[in-house]
Length: 334
Ligand code: AVJ
Image 1 (cartoon, rainbow, N blue to C red):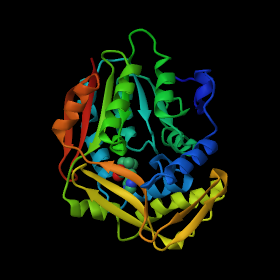
Image 2 (image 1 turned 135 degrees about the horizontal axis):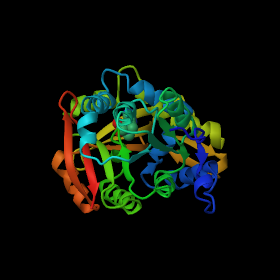
Image 3 (image 1 turned 90 degrees about the horizontal axis):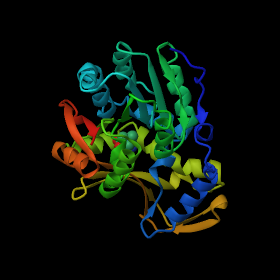
């Protein structure tokens, strides 16, 4: 099967609703409100511009960061087992496609059963471009890139549903760990509202592990994660006319035992003022004050199946990597 739909669609091509605010204005506003909070924070989605995406790709290759390799190992080993739980005529939609490397194992197994429509959904156009390159050689995959937020994109994808089709939504790489737990429940409930009974969600979650290995994974000796984190300030300088002096900030990792999450912060090494023109903001940092840039929650197996029940799914099966504790969970919408 082939369709002329190989180019990324802007979301408005599929759902002609009033279009979202331009991304830069939204970024400027998010920076303004995040940096005005008592614990300053910046939304982690903004870590992934072109530079950030390349640095994250490098992180996934570091020996200390086992998460992505574990995710990929599971998909490679168990793709067929996973698909055995699902009916024929699957349409695949992926939330946050990244480069598409891990997904390849699943799609290859699937195209042995059927020609396939695959909707990668990502707010990053460059991620979609990479993804399209990754699958260019797979003739039986019709790729329709959706440059949109997860829920907007998913709405658009399911709006193409024809009778008898089942959707499989992929949410891999423990991206769900970026949400605080109540927000994750809320988000997953919204995913469920896009779906019909019998549709499936394959959820990749990083599991709890010794804190020492987490510190190494998120504060690697080569400094790639530090660069990934500080790039957010560089991005604000580039896109919002900020004047952060990067040398005066540093990467900091914390582990919150109660919340069971790694927190990534940027620490001001001295008292200093920064202005960000496009956000119409000047702020003064105390020495040692931090900007919280990302939360990476860690899970246990039981809570993942409980989460399914809270959000309108049932957890049908789980596959676990023991080298780097990580789980793929297959949820079915009830
Ligand atoms: C892409 C959100 C899964 O939580 O480990 C890696 C991001 N941040 N190193 C993670 C990340 C710092 C990553 N996720």
